[in-house]
Image (cartoon, rainbow, N blue to C red; front, side, top):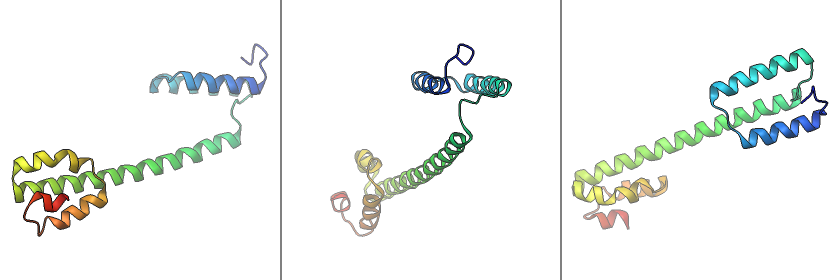
Length: 130
């Protein structure tokens, strides 16, 4: 695009459109980035400024951090659900645990914790989940 005389703004917009429309496999994307970097270096015409690169890195770090936090929260919730199902099975039987599985596995941590406390004194599954 640079060789054809496109200005920097047009090149950026075209790259954004192409990036939005096409997702390359990881290996192809890595090869493309290397080729692009080599081309930019040879022409000394980066299509992303230093400030843009810094913003991208900062955004990636924030995204990774948020992703890790969400992963930990999801893992904790799944562990709570698994433990509650195990307790239900021990207290009320496997058939009751199986009937409750969908509700327990799709519930939030707050409900799971409340139900986990109730199971200690409940005489029926209705007393746990209601």
